[in-house]
Amino acid sequence: MTETPHILLVDDDSALLQALPQTLHLRIAGINIDTCNEAKCALEQISHNDYDAIISDIKMPGMDGLELLRQIKKVRSATPTILITGHGEHDLAIQALRGGAYDYIQKPIDRDTFVASLQRAIQTYQLHRQVVTQQIALAQHANMLEYQVQKRTSELSEANQTKEKLFSIVAHEIKQPLSNLKGMAQLLQQQVDRQVPAESLVQGLQEIEHALERTELLVQDLLDTSLIETNLFVLHCQRQDLVALCQRILQEYTAGTAGPRLMSEVKGRPLMAEVDESRLCQVLLNLLGNARKYSPQGSTIIVRVQQLGYQAIISIQDEGPGIVVEEQEKIFEQFYRVPGIEPQAGIKPGVGLGLYISRKIIERHGGHIAVESRPGAGSTFAIYLPIAIDETTTDIIPGAEPHTAAVWTLIH
Ligand code: ADP
Figure 1 (cartoon, rainbow, N blue to C red):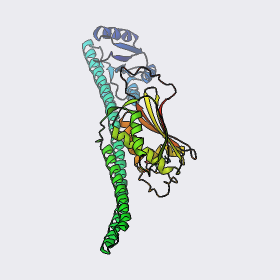
Figure 2: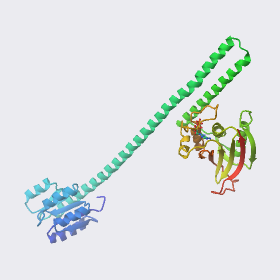
Figure 3: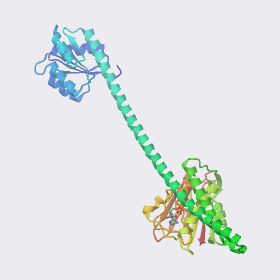
Figure 4: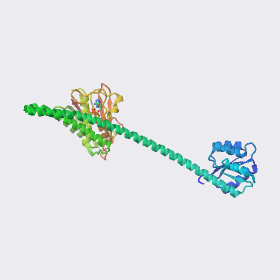
């Protein structure tokens, strides 16, 4: 027996109701016995307690043992019930067994037989209880597995839909520049055949170059997305000063004549973080590109490097159209473009992968990316990165106001 047994003894014979518990206490360690001198009281007890076994006399005034057995079967069908019959009352014993009794004991009661039968009954019921518990656990496990299968299936179907969308976008986006390229190449061929002067060919060649660049960018975005999706995206991080890194990027970005102009710069002390330089550069160029793509010419773009506790923040603030709150989460998803926000004239819209890739790159660095924006009031995209901590990092005040390390102002 695994648990302390709890049983119910029902008999109108008060002498037996006293004697039997004494015998049982001596032979079954720790047994807990409730007694009733009539069936009604027994039913009341049974409704409150899940007994390991019930022993009842068959012959009792009012409700007899057989009727009590029927009632027990209704409320506690699995509880083993042993009935006590008078000597030679074989008919009653058979009726008891047919009515679902676990066993019967004849009077005068042979104590060994009685105890052995009761112990079997208790063991049977305790095993039954364990089986039920295990069945419930199994059913719960099966439910959990089913839930996981459903969840995985819906993830797979979502991934499949994304892939289908990707194929259709790739086909559409690559088809356009390819047919442009084909047309331009044919035109150049005709011009070469007609021996048009070399200068006239230059424009055509430039257009071909632009179309190729755009296709190259698109292919690069798709490649990055595929690396992220298949978990093959690897970072090569090194300790870098974010102020110096931004300085280099912005100097290169503003060096050409077609790009924005660097109006002013305020550089403070270094701010170190473990980053993959080329990937962080990719994110910054994407954010700068968006700031220029979506805001009016001549407007200002401000880039800041700040420290807030254990985090470094690189933010890019523009004077573009701004984004309504409901759209702000969605722009970091794949292929999402805010309806009604168009690039400045002459700039082709992207496919909506830039911010998705940027978010994944920053998350891989242990950071996050966020936008603060209001329609008509421009947008600020902020990259949060954990700063590198070593024995020289002494002056970190968690939760304080951000401390600005560097600011650059660009006009585009
Ligand atoms: P896209 O190639 O379309 O620019 P992104 O993933 O970089 O793709 O951006 C997703 C969308 O978020 C853009 O299509 C645009 O609607 C919106 N968006 C991104 N940056 C800005 C910005 N600085 N100002 C306003 N809207 C922006």
